Image 1 (cartoon, rainbow, N blue to C red):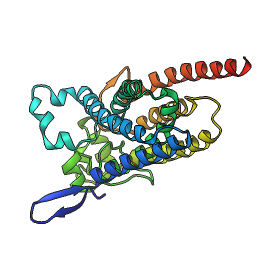
Image 2 (image 1 turned 90 degrees about the horizontal axis):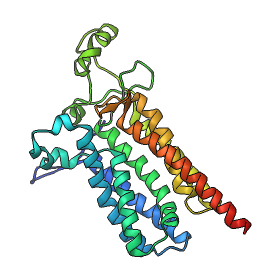
Image 3 (image 1 turned 30 degrees about the horizontal axis):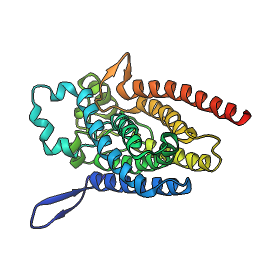
Amino acid sequence: MFPELFKIPGIDFTVNTYGALLALAFLAGLFVMARQAEADKLDKNRMYDLGLWVLVASLIGSKLLMIVTDWNEYQGDWRQFFSLDFLRSGGVFYGGFIGAVIASVIMMRIYKLPWWRTADAFAPGIAIGQAIGRLGCFSAGCCWGKPTTAFCGVHFSDKGHEITNVPTIVAHLPAAIQQQWAEKLGGLTAPIHLHPVQLYEVGATLVIFAILLVMARKRRFHGQIVLAYALLYAVARFTIEFWRDDPRGALLGLSTSQLIALLIFIGGVIALTYRSRAARNSAQT
């Protein structure tokens, strides 16, 4: 993989692939959102302002949830919160999603924007932004998958291991499974291949993006697009998490993201049922 794009000579500054793709993801998301908002006759300038607030809230939320899920790593050393590694990290997506929803509710009331219509405009932009952002994860080696001998397995570079601790040899794996893989592959120094879960999510979010664009043309009620996004991504994320292997916290045998995905799916089904019935009742009266 390519965790570093290039170095700027003279000032010893490295432009990381992850950061560049993350910036591109936000720009692409804002562009798609603006196009969707314009098609729905929403104030594009207000939408850009809202997008910036949502961006800041999502960054804060993603890092807060990362602290919660990795608390054992951060507790007792608050100085890590101001380290370059912490600031460069993308955090946990669902933390960013929750932060973005909270910020959007507050700012939409201030800007007097209709929440469901505005959220519908944002949904496809979120999906395409995720697809690009996960390419950044793949380039850096973060958010890695479980070891595999399948044809789709990928071997990350030593530089990736230096930056994110992604396993590149059997000795980098958790002690509980080192011996198992050492016997399979021929020793602790044997190269290890991992499920490219980042690319699995890229594919899933691109499919979701395409579905949302088609749905937007045939929308039956406001809120249908954002709720469809919430349901589709919850299913995709819950499934992909079974192949994820980076430490992210767990409860009841499920990862933090799986639990959040489950709650969002249940809430999404309830909200979609309510909005659909309300739209049908409105059409009948």
